[in-house]
Image (tube, rainbow, N blue to C red):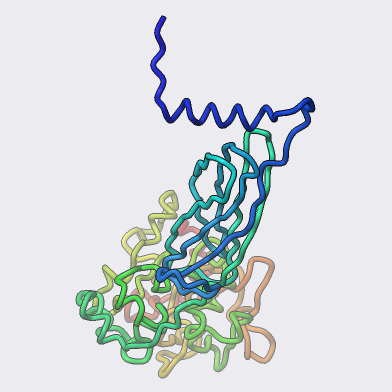
Length: 367
């Protein structure tokens, strides 16, 4: 039977055979490879060890065959937050010097020390590994202002203009400096931080620890503290429910991304309360920012709390620590009492007049 082999394959097999069977009486392996070094250059061919994100890195490996033979090389580039493979390359020929070259592009988010590791192998199972290093210096983006963002994000910018974030908390307060994002149009140059800790920088006090109170109300600007003091704090983040680009007052349907029923679908509501929004009872006006209304147990603040747990067996004073300067937390965290959850409506104006003792008897029957 006739076999058709390509000339290249025959040459490779020939050199492999020469390399594997050294001449002379001794059958001992012969040292064939000498890995002479790795050279790193920029796109102009200038040797350097300093690069920026997005730069092209040229990598060249040089080695010597001490006799006719074959060798192959492959490698990896490993950075702080990225990596790249250097694909397999074959070299074969007579005794002499050889090179293999690769070119890679550094990701625009790369930073820090980066290792180049190349492995050189031949059929005699000689294996030589060499490494070289270079550093990626991150691009320092500059702040450009929210108006610059409006050029590509006009709808979001228009919505933000209607929020209380405008003008104090612009796009770059949450998303970081935008100059490189604008130049490259790459999302990798913009911060997408969905943690509650970010919101807590403005909507929290004391790194989210404790909840300050005064005059029988929760003090304002503690939404992060309140969230952390509930079971929601372990399961949700602020943007689970909120879209910070939209105003709750101007565009509530877009500002609130999910409603309570999406997570609490099996929660029954009785006592003809089915059409009352969850937040009316579980997020009542227990925060005082500017002006309160009502008197005694019927007092209401002017901002909603994010403490959704109602402790029906507790008295109004139980909600606060002695002295009234902080909220009390039990084993389950912070809580609100029936005077805030119920009497803000059951004051004879919004709904039927009830006393604190009246609502204490019925509040446990709602769910």
